[in-house]
Length: 141
Image (cartoon, rainbow, N blue to C red; front, side):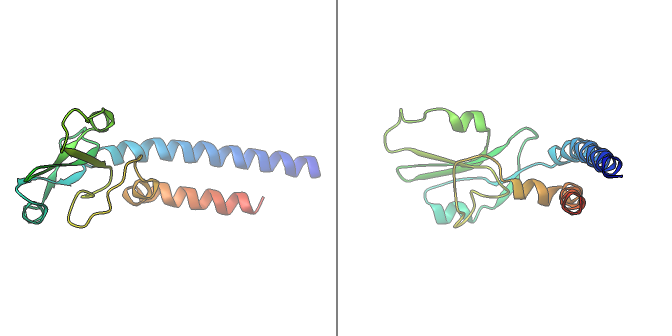
């Protein structure tokens, strides 16, 4: 009986993994269709820039950037590949990138790094439900 139960547990675990992988593939293709929003502006200072608001980014933009220089602040949609480049050629100009919704806005906590997993789960609730069900079932095996 122990071998039979072990085989059933393995089968159940395999089915859960396949279902979760399929759900993730479908869900992430839906998540990719959602466009990122970033604060967009060109102004003499941060406060003036922040009043200009946010806008949807082009389809493949995956970062928000803030470029500050002498008496100039520019916020826009950007690309991680652009953010990863070395931008130290211009002294007095600083570039920061972030990767979540409106993260370059007023008093935003800016950080370098990869997109936040929590954002992916928030954007795709089915992925969160699938992950929770997987944890529940596997904890009972």
